[in-house]
Length: 133
Image 1: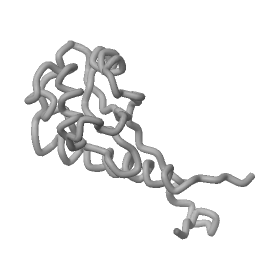
Image 2: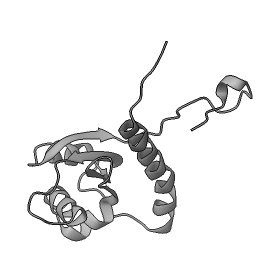
Image 3: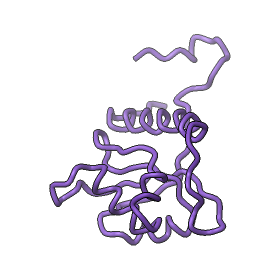
Image 4: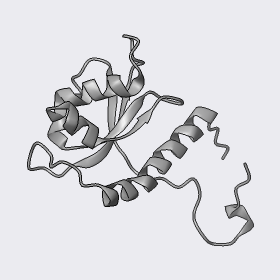
């Protein structure tokens, strides 16, 4: 079975994996603000349209996020990473209630829970497990 993966997909998977691996570092270095509801916050990736007002990506994403988390300061604490190369968007710690509100914001295309994926099994030592790029 042949599988075709385009370069954009590989880059996006790398960015998601890189963000998730650095998430533990960030959360151990600084405390995050408590979520606005009692539901636990998870990391989500928010895909957005390109900023149309000439603003830089981070400013635009902070405005969108502020409308959901309550303030610019809370948005800065929630924001984890800004995507602007292979995709436009950001990752942030959000509660399910905040995700629901965010999905209704103009310019938000999709909100998905962040998860780490592996392109191939780890270990095994067989020749089939080696990936050359």
